[in-house]
Image 1 (cartoon, one colour):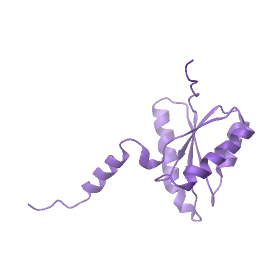
Image 2 (cartoon, rainbow, N blue to C red):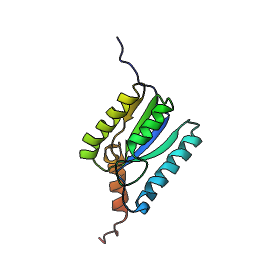
Image 3 (cartoon, rainbow, N blue to C red):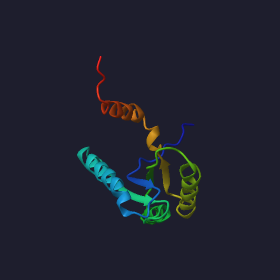
Image 4 (tube, rainbow, N blue to C red):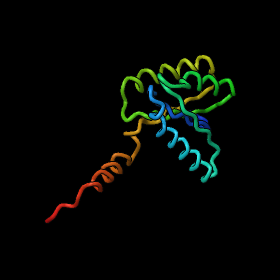
Length: 137
């Protein structure tokens, strides 16, 4: 029997830690805008939301509950964390499991942390090396 396929997500949640300083989230705002613009340019139906673990609103449980109550079938969570730590490995799965208990029809995909996206480390290394002053031979 073939494996069940998950429905394609139509909502991307940018999940970040949060900060006491609201300026901290400006980069997340820019990422949200970039995703929305690229989705529109590609003709994709996609909603992008932000959600936080702590210190900022809305929190992830609130966003997942809103989406579940609206009947969303498929959501993707993009952890905007550089690497996998306790928040991604423990907190995020627990928060998703709580939402799925409340809304059993809600399918939540968790995408990789930033450093795990293919090509990103090579791209970043190239960008860093491009900043070096050329050596004199």
